[in-house]
Length: 335
Length: 250
Ligand SMILES: Nc1ncnc2c1ncn2[C@@H]1O[C@H](COP(=O)(O)OP(=O)(O)O)[C@@H](O)[C@H]1O
Ligand SMILES: [Mg+2]
Image 1 (cartoon, helix red, strand yellow):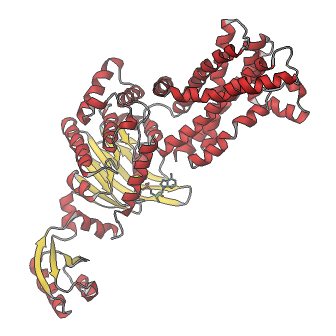
Image 2 (spheres, protein in one colour):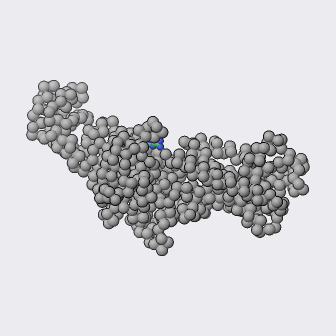
Image 3 (cartoon, helix red, strand yellow):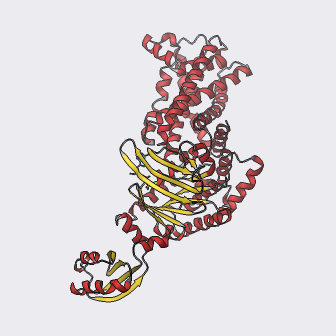
């Protein structure tokens, strides 16, 4: 039982699909037991692939991974007894009731028959699906289906839950509902949670640790705060009077010693700096020399979006998210 | 073993919520018996060994509909891959083949219900069955087994298909050739030799023979061979489907 103190321990993990697609390219990752860990990355970054390897569905091409000390290849049956998993797509049968779904899963997980009813009622209570338990799942909303999936993942009281994009396609209030249930469950049981997401605010708000994954590599891991600090302690926001982006000498600004990065949005120029005191004068000087008129200056903390852009590149737009949402909705309708 | 039982229970629960599908699927075979059969029997062109033509084709028609449903099962698996269900089933404790075989047996269960709808109607149409409960039960067991075999066969094919649409085309076009290249609608003896050869390789011929013997003619002199053929087919398909299942996963 080496490394048993880590809930997840991944070393040099790679996965190549069909000898062509390199979905994971040397992932190193350690997650402590009891943490809520958010793996944040754009579509196609390899999040699902990593999660499927950790839950023993597919085999890695090279490298090692273990869950609570059990190797995901050699000890796959031990791993399966520790984990539960909610796929990115729908993982419940939509042509039977919510209760029946939980009953089937509780039997597949060999929950003793005298405890089944109690366990199911308990998780139905946690996710707040009591009153619709006997309706066919097809009649549920997207948020209710997600909560039913969480319930099925809670049935076995797993040591670690793997959730692949648990709130994809949900509106903000349904997302909030999902997280409130999940958060109270983990507070009560101390379950480790590993989830994938491409929503920055979700990772920011609901996590102990965040890992950023891009093109098959986990590029950085830390708390939301430490990640924000790592790209610069402060963010200076200049409100500009003439807002033609072409006028702004971006290259000269980013070339400054104490500047980590800069971006323009509308009439606002945001500059990430080590500290405002030493960076402000030089930045203002550059803008002044370029003839850019400043209307207002304010100082803020950087957001996770900027952290993400600085590690994963600015291409990580929400566009893919929308496409996935549609795909999931389609699945729900088709039933 | 437990996983297989749960898969069957799941199927019962799904059927309970959707009886309509079961009845819907029984319509086509009943058309065969109610329309095609009587017309063909007025011609009296096919030697059936003294059995009325409708009676002669009843086992084949029944098995065609069972095969159709079983092959359709592969579509289910491809669909479950597109949804997350299959991924989730992969994470439950227990061997993978229990999922494959469990699903195949669930298909067998559907086949039994299907038969229990078609057979009474056939009786009403005037088909005369062998009045032997033991034979009847045995026939149902054979139907259950072959349905499992064809469902595995369809999982095997599904494992080569990336999308459900593509599978639909292939899956649906399989059940009729199986029917026509068997002894379901005409005895082997009147087939041209090449077709006879194919019919002998077609597992459908053996099941039809077994079910016909058990339910219509009462002649079970070939039953052992038929059961052996069905058994070999099933085991081969269970193994092949379990192995190819890997491809479905990735
Ligand atoms: N089953 C598969 N076969 C081939 N390529 C795949 C498969 N699953 C994922 N990929 C590819 O691997 C890369 C990573 O995908 P994935 O792990 O699903 O990313 P994410 O979950 O972050 O969106 C993508 O380029 C994707 O197209
Ligand atoms: Mg994914």
